[in-house]
Image (tube, rainbow, N blue to C red; front, side, top):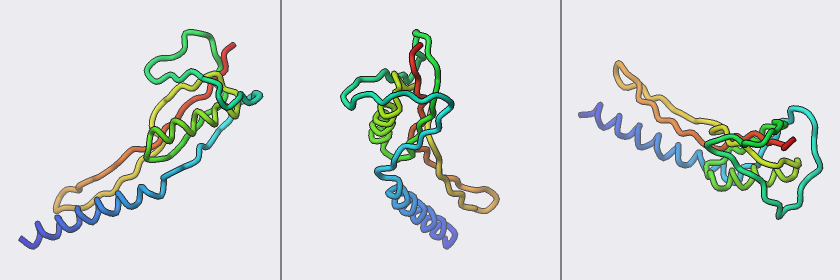
Length: 128
């Protein structure tokens, strides 16, 4: 009975700590890694293309990776889009999540693992 109580306390603590730790990511700022040329910035209200499940049909070049490691995907996408405008992108291709956190708890002969993925990584593109 004590073992079950200990496991319950550990799991509860883990969930509380995981939820509290995620607040450190709130309002994260995007990070840009340039692959080559830079381009003039676009006006703030300019619409850019966002590709999530397919690639553009028009020819393009990939010139930067933009990552925002926030736990709120809407915020991350907004920040990536703003940064894409600043670096002159015509569009972005969402390629996946930006990071992951996890904790393992030994329980007898096995380990209970809790993990969470967060943030967004995108590639900035310029049409030819």
